[in-house]
Length: 485
Ligand SMILES: Cc1cc2nc3c(=O)[nH]c(=O)nc-3n(C[C@H](O)[C@H](O)[C@H](O)COP(=O)(O)OP(=O)(O)OC[C@H]3O[C@@H](n4cnc5c(N)ncnc54)[C@H](O)[C@@H]3O)c2cc1C
Ligand code: SF4
Image 1 (tube, protein in one colour):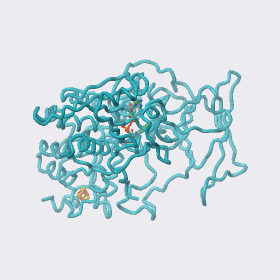
Image 2 (cartoon, rainbow, N blue to C red; image 1 turned 120 degrees about the horizontal axis):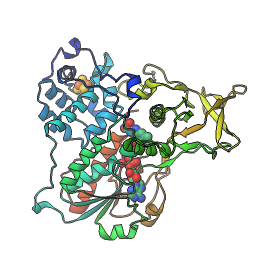
Image 3 (tube, helix red, strand yellow; image 1 turned 135 degrees about the vertical axis):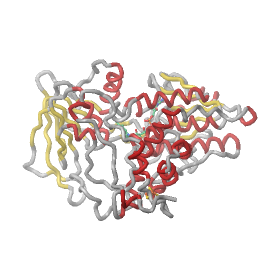
């Protein structure tokens, strides 16, 4: 039973951020500690709703009111168990999720929603500190399947699928072409959003449970598709949506213009090694094209590298500060948000489009020409006379991704793609090739970590059913599940 007056007596509180001038001098996470007493009060704001819409907002179906009440009453260990009942990696979502559950929280209709994400991260951090997250080894030999499963890709979808399948008794090997596991968790998302020690700690747990990792191995190249099929009873593809959107304007091939996902992995590696990256923003006038989260990650990274200036360009107009009428509760609204990176510096310019890049004598980008656009009705229209030049000697393209790679792996397996550029699948995550399944961004398209984990869990249940004829693994979502709109 929740505290019936909690939300009346306690205002919402979120975690503080370290001072900007201090945090841009290092790569550590920006948030300060919350403290258990305040957290228990925050959890006590939950009304334990008869119909908890927070569940609907969360693709994992996290048991939010249950763990809120356990935290309120000081039962942290039980809260950690309930948290893990639906989420393999709450330390990732608790740090990185945009929290659609909070947008869907019933309290949000008339007041500030429960600070669900903070409760989540504090539960799991405490659980790790207290030693409540031991390896959960597979069930006894009697129920091990003796079947080998290959998981291709070690982002959140691949890791979730691998952990579920290992725990249910299959012999799982994760193949990853990068030199270390984690996918975008390691080489996309910067350290200041999630320190990699959280990922490494979870990988130690997975190794102890029996999941094998083969890194530096590109499936389809270093190991052929035919061999993968021959050696494994099932394959889960979780290779992400890695084909970046380009900007087909004059000068786009000049030196100094890079995709965000060329820049961020180098920056993450350099931050981990305390070295200088091959592409650095130090002393540069940086322009980031794309106003989303990837762009914000480039912004925070460029500021830490010592950029002279950073400007983020977005083709859409500045979103409203409050929920627009077309996006009522419980929708996760597109509103103006100030991420930690935006708080740290840089300018944001809205409703502009880049027309061309201009070069210096050495063939390096020296500026770009932009024009204001009108989006009142229909596609963007240029507003003649609003052209202007913006100085820049490093340009980062952060305009999203158009789908999964159609490289040697896809060709070797012969899998079909859908009209949106993702790997086609049926309602049990099965591709067009028997025994080959797909989860995460590779099947859904560019999405979020919480969806990738939900897909990995659900695909694991489908694979288990395929191998055994039945499954006890939970399936959080169907491939067709979509956010509230
Ligand atoms: C810069 C950036 C920041 C983001 N920030 C956030 C955030 O803060 N919060 C959030 O919720 N979401 C965020 N996202 C989105 C989120 O990271 C993705 O939705 C999520 O990582 C998708 O998980 P995945 O497992 O499907 O794929 P990925 O994480 O992309 O992992 C795919 C893995 O497959 C490997 N791979 C590909 N092909 C092969 C092959 N042939 N053989 C072997 N390995 C292969 C890749 O190397 C990679 O490691 C961000 C995305 C980007 C690009
Ligand atoms: S919707 Fe909000 S108040 Fe209701 S149960 Fe969920 S977290 Fe608690």
